[in-house]
Length: 126
Image (cartoon, rainbow, N blue to C red; front, side, top):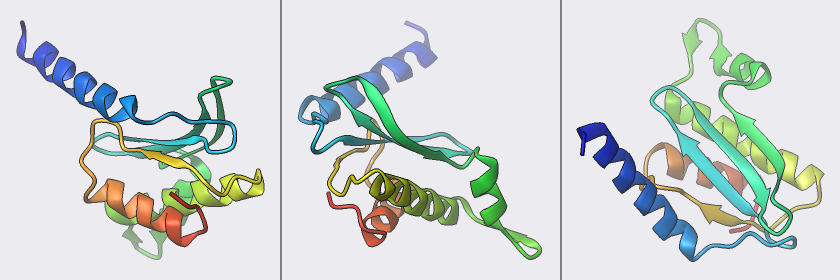
């Protein structure tokens, strides 16, 4: 098996192992997080209906505008906090206060933890 295929297989297995214990219901949907080298995105998913309820990403122009304060560009951790606050605000607008946190195949530290802490601080419960 090629090296990148092996890496992808391991990552997929980790994500499925984490997701195995999680199930987003209508009353408590799943907050799924994806992190790439440059960006981070989060979406709230109702697994019963198979629909995305709310989403936020650093690739959105509205959130990218918040990242530039003066001459300095925000760090990736600061952008994660902005996305966490945005996803929490969008969820609360749709009357969702409790979610199940799905970190996917990523460890709960760094940018993933920053997003989760910001979402909690903005009013989401998980």
